Figure 1 (cartoon, rainbow, N blue to C red):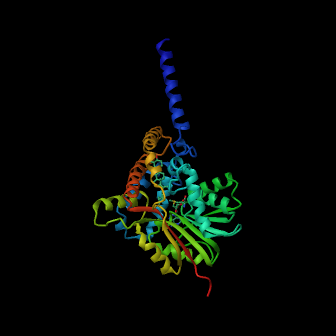
Figure 2 (spheres, helix red, strand yellow):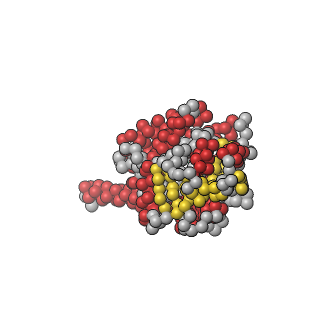
Length: 358
Ligand SMILES: C=C(CC[C@@H](C)[C@H]1CC[C@H]2C3=CC[C@H]4[C@H](C)[C@@H](O)CC[C@]4(C)[C@H]3CC[C@]12C)C(C)C
Ligand SMILES: C[S@@+](CC[C@H](N)C(=O)[O-])C[C@H]1O[C@@H](n2cnc3c(N)ncnc32)[C@H](O)[C@@H]1O
């Protein structure tokens, strides 16, 4: 074989291998969104790196955030930057779940979501709200399971588009509606929902009382609200520098204006008028660790990082995607450490009732 033929053959083989690696390898977790489809959400490709830098400079010291009213804008930026990576590398449900022996991650996620609506005790045809709905993973599982009508609200317009596409594709758009808005000032009438749930979303509110007040307002008297909250636990020691570093790492890598302690949740719920029906950290034994899935993916994260770096070099993925992916890579470690040390829980469950009308 002459040298030209050799070079062309080698080039073809390399290109074919790269194409296979990029388009078909997918991520270790799910085959949903492909790596070549990674975008910056509603942010134009050329502005992703700048937006990442703005996000990072705002959230790197969350405790010193003076202007709380700017938080929702930067949370929106965060979700423009991470939504595609989340879908590509985790799936359509942007939350954690206790691992269940013999069950897949997908199954464990669905069971965790269905438990939320079962505790609300709503009937088919009821109208319930998903406060901070993401791309609608929980909404679709909950609508299919309960046959309730679910209205989701998220501050991120790109997630609204993704959620509506997934709802239609799943044949659930007759039960699921998605609205773009701020759960601190919702475009819904007083006493208009038969139930409300929020799954790992209200942690983004700069002031928990504000979002709980809004949820209380839109909930019908006598109806229930359930939330899975991100909290520091009774094992967290503010005087332990290692604990502080882990919690700060979780806050800046997840757009959190400041993690609450587990004690704050019921206090705030009661302050806005809720009766607390049940409260339980779903991460505690006998539940199996929620962070196993995060730790099992490390090899995949390395491969994903190589993939993202190649795609950005080729101009297929936005340049800033490499920075975002690196941030998430580090954040995964902080989250796993927080879980292993028992100082952080992403699933402190609280079930509250709005008192029946006097
Ligand atoms: C509730 C929130 C988000 C929780 C989780 C859905 C996400 C938290 C950390 C995310 C991830 C970390 C590592 C990424 C990895 C480097 C990449 O290759 C593939 C995606 C990740 C696994 C990504 C997936 C989603 C998370 C687990 C917060 C924001 C309130
Ligand atoms: C980690 S995601 C969880 C999404 C969904 N609950 C799930 O489990 O897949 C948090 C969600 O809260 C939304 N969110 C954060 N702050 C918000 C705000 N102020 N108003 C409305 N949505 C908000 C984000 O846009 C995102 O959709």
